[in-house]
Length: 330
Length: 117
Length: 143
Image (tube, rainbow over all chains, first blue to last red; front, side, top):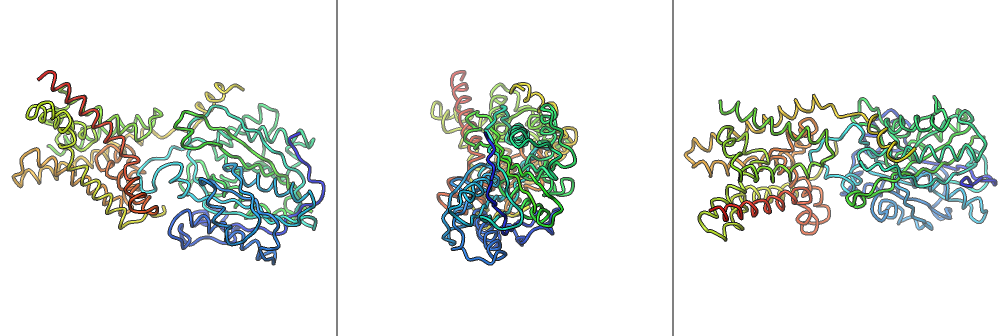
């Protein structure tokens, strides 16, 4: 069984999303708690700026919950940078027990899943799930220097700069995590690092199919099914693959990468991506709708491309992974 | 007239690169390497020199011109110095461009920071 | 679905770069940069420099301009439209040297900037030098 049911109530106590300037100019601009005035966020390197996104997201979450860091028993988090330095340097001042994770862009669902499962064991009372990404720190690690003149193909995606944090609590009332589905790695032989949506789409569909089967539900049982960062072309492939499996993704299917930016106006090609993409869109735009009761049941499926420039240069293909977390309103 | 020739030949050399970028899986670094090596080989077989005589900067400014400069330099060095020229000719002829690239790159790094787009 | 079938499906459905527009832009930008080079070449020749020196000075000037436009955050904006028109001329080589220098300044002058300056342009020097040695051998043999 790939799906774990969270039987004791695990609820969302608070959440926050901090984003960069470009994200703050997109369609979701009013959803975020803080928009950085520039991409350095007052720091002198992009990596330090990413860490500041993390610390600000946690700070704002704690502030909303009216808690001090010592009230948090466990923190799950990760990012795209080598050795996960975005998260680890971002949380160093909090002194919260920490488990660092890497699931590429699927890390938000991975953190939320692990936090929920751990809380449901009943031995701790509060845990935070946090992830981040930063366009410029990711570019210099995965692609080219910023000032290098290159053209991006239409299938390229734009790494979201930002961080989202969710504080989960054992017991309480409000939005609950009811089940999580841990995905398998799927490799369909895509090797183009500028076309990651289709590399992740099979993993998304597989996790969705497994989740629906394990929970005996249909697509229409959800107010919203949200993929992490498939982008416009990845979404198209996901719809096709799902149709092959007899799953029809209709109006209640959306992608965080496509929600984050105005694809026509903001020059992001196929849409947003990165660990921060599903984290900020979910924390900023979707959780409030669950809290207000507009949505009753939402399935977040963050998608990740497990690869590195080293692996690509050695001729490896890009593996996809996707984890699902089901949230239900009161 | 020499401006028009430079424009057209230079433009066509770049168009070839654009087709390679858009229609093959070659990365920019590979294309640049291909241009330099192609420039050197075309010079060796005597094809590139007439193009340089015809188009001037239109043939020397694209990176094939860098290969032309390497091959031409090595040719002259071999004529003058013999065996030693095989190794000194190429880099000597292109040293000016490389040194300026290093100097300007260094200064750019010291005085300018990458900026968000 | 097999890997092969999926790859073909993705390939068939993937949005393509607008080749026609890109070619026109590459032609205009590339031609334009070479025309600027020709202007410098003519200028240096008119100052009485011999052909070879004038050609070297032209290359050096174009490298300087490429690096300057990179430092002024202009070159990547031109390249977004110019594509290969800004990649193939020697100004693109200068951009490939200056941009990592700026980028990796954050990791220090020696281990960052100096070490990483040629991460993109390095192969051009390496393969170019090897090609020149090969040409030199040929010239030496047929001499």
